[in-house]
Image (cartoon, rainbow, N blue to C red; front, side, top):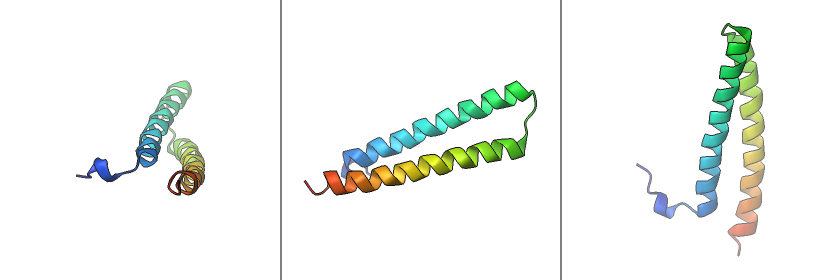
Length: 73
């Protein structure tokens, strides 16, 4: 188990944000599946890949900004 007392606050916030964005992706997949009345793996993979790619890119940008701004104070 990870000792969270050593993780900086902004890293904890980034982790919980990632979990929240993953839950939003799950909701999007559920809505699309019910709207189409069928599970289309290709469509879900396309949506999931694009969504998580964008989330990971912007979280990487935020991590770089936070690490430069907050860790050097």
